[in-house]
Length: 95
Image (cartoon, rainbow, N blue to C red; front, side):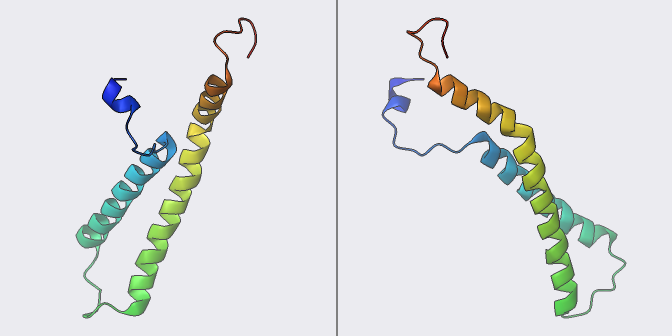
């Protein structure tokens, strides 16, 4: 870490939130592309509220499942980080 980073006032974003946000964006784009490419063209003009609600609901379910899975996957890393922060480097043999 450079001396510029040490005095920085930027907030830290956890690995969990960075992975989750990236996955949420990818899932959103994948859902949009899938709807456009694979739809049989049965969407009404203008799009009906029911159709839009189904698409938004499906995307919300995908994002929530992503949230739960990513949280479970990165939990051991969070525990390791907490242990590392609590370790006293001057006290050998104790954590």
